[in-house]
Length: 485
Image (cartoon, rainbow, N blue to C red; front, top):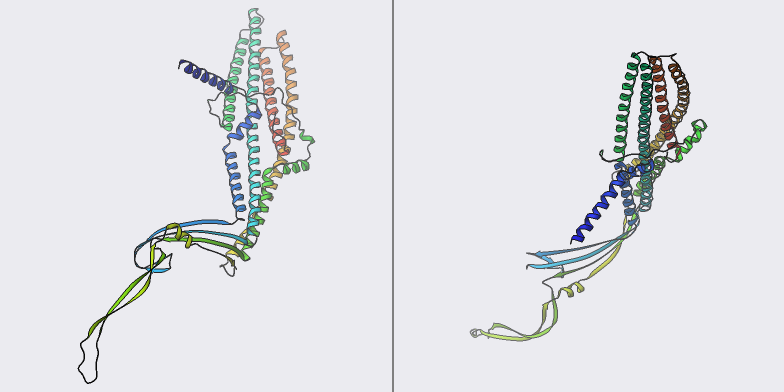
């Protein structure tokens, strides 16, 4: 018993240790995307739509086969009622039990079964395409939030670097003040700069916390879940927006958009719906059969005959003309007759003897159904037109979106190039001001002013870098490239 308890304790310890280790693993972008696609409510709902479309297709295919239904009933009859086993009226209370099987198969109904199957196949493919589009949309949302976390982390690193630089400069100035080479007031300027850098660092950490929280929300993780991301060493950009032609980009976007493919399938489905509605104009032909039997507790079976003497008594009188009437005398006459011998018929015997079956062919010719078929055809035509318009609208929207994505990526690239040049110039100016400060040719106010300009340039360059990354990922999303860093 003690050994069992010890084993259980060790098992739980190993389990929780492994769970804790897994929870603290860093998450890559690929892992985040896979997790979000499994946890996404929207994707799960879309997958339910696929399951429903699959069931609809199965029902459409099953309509080709014969139907088979069974029925039975148990009944107590009172008063004047027809006995189902003899088809005779019976005034006595009796018990009856009926069984039946019937089948029916449609031979022709204006090709509606065939077209229903084709329509269900198109709807199933469309539902699958919608699910794939939802997966890609969720992946893009995750990638956006992932980049926001990376930006916030780099922003903290930049803030720490700026704070360290101010602290190092304060140490240098303190030495110069002790040597009498700098006035006491310059220390105050640097301390104010350090306080401002610490405030920026706190703000950057808050921004990171918010970015991580937003990523957890997309991943549907609990806010208290231990979480860290796996930052790539170097994000390689393989797409140059200046080398992308709009016409080629638009063609690729159309080819890599599952939602447009779903729209095309729904156009075909709507056209098939029109054919289904027109099937109501044709006659329908079906063939069916039935099998049944019945039982009654009043059922009897003949087991033989018996001879029975039947006597009849009547009065006989004789009358002779001219004489008074004679007294009537009773006379009895008898005869031997055969009477059937009956006994209660067994349950199984009745079911066997009362068995009935048959089959038939039915034809239904539509003549006038108060305009229902005509109205269904008109509605189906409108649905086909609406599906085509919906597709055209989505193509037009995609065209505008691709144009905007390409323009944004090109603008972001130029902005990043400009901010990098500005940062290089500010770094050179800051290095020059630092040397002048060390030589006594500049004061701390000038150094702080130049440092602030360099810091602003670093922040701007960082913002432009991630803005460019985001715009490139958007463009690559429409080009059908996988989302990765």
